[in-house]
Amino acid sequence: MNTPALTSSPSQTTGLAPGKRLLAVFATWGLLLLAQPGWFHQDGFGWLAMVALVPWAWAASQPGPRAKSVEWLGATFGLCGYAYWMRYLLPWAVFPMGAVPALYMVGAGVLLRRLARRFPLALAAPLAWVTGEAVRFGLDAPLSFGWWRLGTLSHAQVWFASGARVFGVWGLSVAMAAFAGWIADRLRGASAVGSVRLSYGVGLGVPLLVIAAGWFTSPPAMVDGPRVMVVTPGLEQKLKAHAEDYLQVRLIDPYQLLADGIEAARAAGEPSPDLVCLGETMLPGISIASDVWPALESGVNAPGFAGRIWSLDELQASQDMLQYAVDLALGRALPSQKLLSRYPQPWLRAAAQGTPPIPPGASLFGGVEAMVVRDGALWRMNAAQIWNPEGQPGPVASKVHLVPAAENPYPAAYLPWLLRIIQSVGGYIPDFVTNGVSAVLPFTGRDGRTWRAGVLICYDNSYDDPFLGVQGGQGVDFHLVASNEAWYEESVLMDHMLAFSRLEAIQVGRSVLRATNSGASALFGPDGRLLALLEQDGRHKMVRGTLRVTVPVPKRDADGAAPLTPYVRTRRIQAWAFGILVLACAFLAGKR
Image (tube, rainbow, N blue to C red; front, side, top):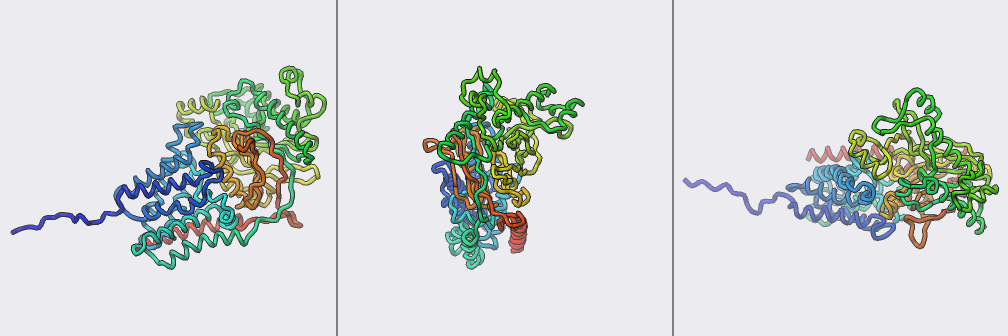
């Protein structure tokens, strides 16, 4: 008796081949990299991002061998590309900054394959992609590194990005992914799953809804606010971190640039500033909280891993240095004979004759290190303050999101070798903490009006919550970002920061002013328009000069309230609605 051979048919399908999947996934991440700001154009090519997910949606929706590993490889490639600017500071960190967050985009592919069993890609792709993006963006290092979102890439297409006023950057991501999913549905043709009407309704309807939201809404009515001058010394980070002449870099040279800017404004017939701004940690010295002194006397000191012991004399000298630097700028103190004999800068001679760098009546904003008592130790904060014309300091605003490794000491605090590497690069051991919330710093202009600046510091600029968390935006006239991007030289990081700032201005309906150490210092209006950018010979990175602007602020009603954008009012409802929709669709797809 002959028994038939048990053989597999060569035509038996096993899903999408790994090679085809790899090409498709690499195509998506390649397009996303080409679309980013700064590579080939300052604003990037946002139109590429509108279709970038088409190959991913087509490939990741199909089962096949090694799907997860291939999609992880593609996402690692793309995310490493987005983090490549880190090579200037910690080159070894580029790979984990891509490989770890890529895991969540693998999860997006798994979710897409589940949803695609029942729904068209116009719906499945945005639900899957934005879910993965939300996890990747929301988790802190070392579990992830958020930085950018799909919607960020549309920042310069204001006709589309204005929809963030209603739906936020997340809404832009959903709309872009839906449009790409709709195209992928058309490519699948007869093999498409789900309702054709639903594909058209979501794939075209959602992007049109976002465009209409921007078209039929407007930012709050604006009036002229304070006159502000930003001082950008074009400071290379190696000089800031390892300068042999600390005073020259942090005091003498920036103040000369400040004095030159005031003179240029006077010669141009411009009004005197209400506020002069220096960038992140530009002011020398340390701002010390009142409870530090008794804690120090009782034996409290720096955390053990920091490898340092603060002395009473050292901290007192640092606090005195900060106040002296402020008083010199505001004309509350005269230059010492030691400074006059050591440095030839003209502003010192003018200050000795009674003409300080900052004209009378103006306040001073500056990034500064602060010191606080936390958990039985003395910790530093990356902070900022405003001093009024009399030299009196206002409250301290702390950075909300600490830079992994560079400021956040964990997990480096448990790895002495990593601490040594960080110290060799940056010149310090990271021992920073945060207050965890953004702050509003008030100041009074020359006309007696009080202005409220929502203050952010550097890395905060890539997140929503420091902009949205300040009294819901109600108590903020404009946002002020103190930033130091000199670590990353002339990389795309500065262009990324500009993109973040533009979209945040649209989301919250407030102007965003950037005060940086080396560029890019800029002002965005609440409609997303770039109102001013500090440039030198056509360049906006690693440049030197002053940015002098009048900041638009919202017109307040009789009760002093300023209007909020629809997104600020409804963002939590939108987030819950999206989450419920993802869960419901995933459940229904599983019932298929």
